[in-house]
Image: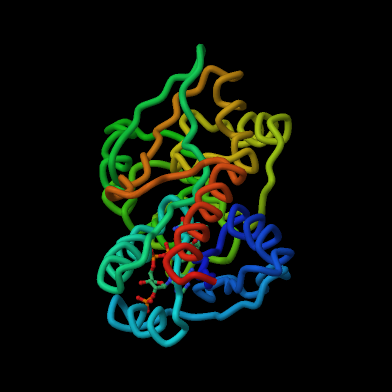
Length: 253
Ligand code: NAP
């Protein structure tokens, strides 16, 4: 069986590790090429966009791919839409492997919204001190709410930030709760604005806000289309093996 994994996440890296030791499976990991120094991977890797749905269809056909696993970030909506369309066009299954979103627990003060634009509105009229961790490409949505002080944290430096009152921290997770509490106290943060990305690496700010009684404005991930979604690697590998069995039965090999 030949598998293409769309990656760029820790989940995809973990899946690559599992596939790399399978002598019966040929697999390739695809990265968008956004990160300057991508983490080393156990699988063969290709880097860069495919050229939209037509380019992805060509790749799937040229490489005779039997199964597409979309293990991209919950907020990488375009590539997930493309994967679904291209998989359907070529007639191969598409499985989604992604981390589960966070769910509120007692003490959380969350406002959930559907977009960054709605998040900017939800901060309110009165000036507030905002910890903003939505990724460097999402910052322009907050130009609509310039009255706030923004403490912006990104991994790579954002380009052309036009928010009049902001401070930038360049840092890569994971972030522990204690450190997040200290940051929020030191910077007198009174609201956290972030994406519901799930996973443990960036959960510290959610736990910190809860422990300080601070509100969190959380952008929910886009809905996955009508396709099987796995949050657990063993269950995903079970589905991979089931598809392999179907192919073996069909091809008699
Ligand atoms: P996106 O908006 O969904 O995709 C934009 C374009 O980037 C796609 O149309 C595709 O170009 C290319 N692309 C994206 N992922 C690719 C992959 N794995 N392999 C080859 N091409 C890919 O994606 P994004 O939000 O910019 O994210 C880019 C990558 O960073 C993703 O792989 C994602 O897993 C990772 N990431 C994203 C976030 C986030 O918050 N969005 C956070 C952490 C990591 P073509 O149309 O030319 O094929």
